[in-house]
Amino acid sequence: MTDIADKAAPDTARRQESHGIPFGEAVRVWARIAALSFGGPAGQIAVMHRILVDEKRWIGEHRFLHALNYCMLLPGPEAQQLAIYIGWLLHRTAGGLVAGMLFVLPGFLAILGLSYVYVALGDLTAVEGLFFGLKAAVLAVVVQAVFRIGSRALKNRAMIGTAAAAFVAIFFFRIPFPLIILSAGLLGYIGARSGSPLFRIGGGHKGGTGPILRDEDSALGEQIPIHARPNLAWSLKISCVLLALWLVPLALLVTVFGWDNVFSQIALFFSQMAVVTFGGAYAVLAYVAQEAVQHYGWLKPGEMLDGLGMAETTPGPLIMVVQFVGFMGAYRDPGALNPMAAATLGAMLTTWVTFVPCFLWIFLGAPFIERLRDNAALTGAMSAITAAVVGVILNLAVWFGLHTLFADVATWRLGPLTLDIPVARSLVLPSLLLTLAAGIAIFRFRVSVIATLLACALAGMAFMLATTG
Image 1 (cartoon, rainbow, N blue to C red):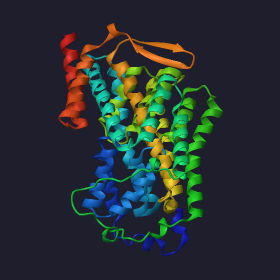
Image 2 (image 1 turned 180 degrees about the horizontal axis):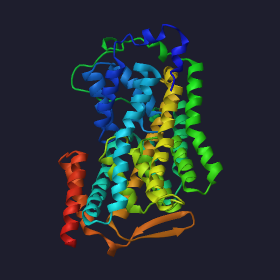
Image 3 (image 1 turned 30 degrees about the vertical axis):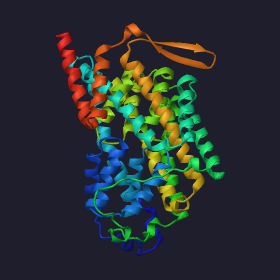
Image 4 (image 1 turned 180 degrees about the vertical axis):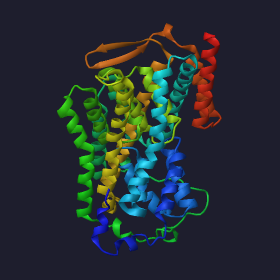
């Protein structure tokens, strides 16, 4: 993509790169960060902080946090958006594009390869055991996410009440996730505008153990680069390009194949997700699972856990699990295409409509973030959204638990109330034991998520081989 900002002044390029960071070196660093980006957004942001702030000293602590706080306000994966932001801050549009694409590429390729194995060899005992073990570990990881995010977000009765209301709304009444998030954001905005201290939220990332790197001591320096200053013409031009890249393929699919075609449904559904995925992957996965399993029939409940296990054990954003959802949806409804070819296109389409908007949000809004930095009302909205996310993730943990630990789950309805009730005799004891072991490893012994997932995968394989051999 042409760097539109470079047309603003003849000497802009020279002054923009006065920090002395070669573009080629930046590409290598972003590739390294992408290869190490395991462990969800917290781990990914920590890797970026360690390499960019502590090791390379390219960007100062305050500017890093400023960028992170802005990305936390946006829909979509905040770690990938932070990479786009810093890449753009260092090397203009090309830097943002390279950083954002490299952040996604390793995970996309890894999950695509695992998806091929899943549909081609999923009935083999060893592969079946691998995913059997991963499901149990992923359940423990999601429970950990509830505690981790809840301990940070639920600081007072207003936040606890918001989380509880979100859980009841989505678990018992099946209220759509976007409506819950919008309602929480509106509540927080109004609460903060009224001056209530209950809707204030702190932010920040805890970096390394050494002294804090001041902005003026970093390679980028304290001043705002010329290309990073508000430029409405540039923002509008590049936003139009990105908007076309996002929506034109969607419009073509609907026009050519109709609304009921699986590719049209994938493009529309995940484009919607790109706009409402506040609070990270765990928050939206309950809604994605609900729609993909119950409405579209793309997946079975246990397969959603398999996909999340893939995303947990590969680099890149956890939201990459939606790639697996698109893969399976197209695989099961390929039309005139070969199922594997359709599945590959489904995975590519899902990834495209999920991540192109992330570039749009950064390139459109980043030059104007100073106007958002101290906005108390927006901060209040974010605090309420974060609290609601805790309730939504708790719903995800319960939903996963029901379908992981029990082979049969009954649904009871009374008016608007809907309740999933496990059939006690269908308890899968090996899954329960593996889940308890994973929980003890994570909560009691502080074993890393990756190590826990791998250990449970090996245990699942050993169990399946022993019981079917």
